[in-house]
Length: 104
Image (cartoon, rainbow, N blue to C red; front, top):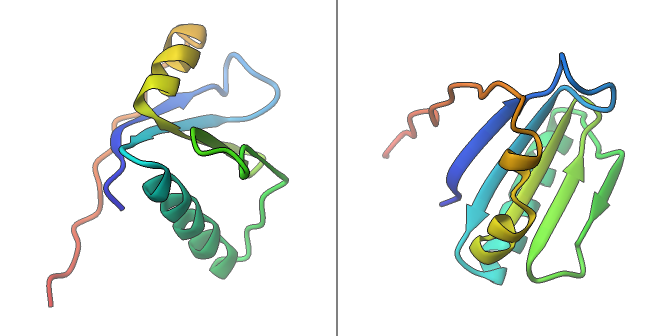
């Protein structure tokens, strides 16, 4: 879905609210909505519904709370403004690589 700068923060040792933050950047409001729809649809297929969502009316950021994982999707300038990586600077980062996609 062309998300960039994907960062996963492990909050298990420093937060009682959630275990992980997934933070990513998109280039446009259209991409923001598209990525949110994709995440929502894929997790719904697996039986996971969000506990809450914020920013759905926004064109700048969206937060999806799946209890153990909170997904933050930002346009670049708003990711920089909120700077969650600095705010949660004590959290270890999880190494992540995208799954290989089949090219049929």
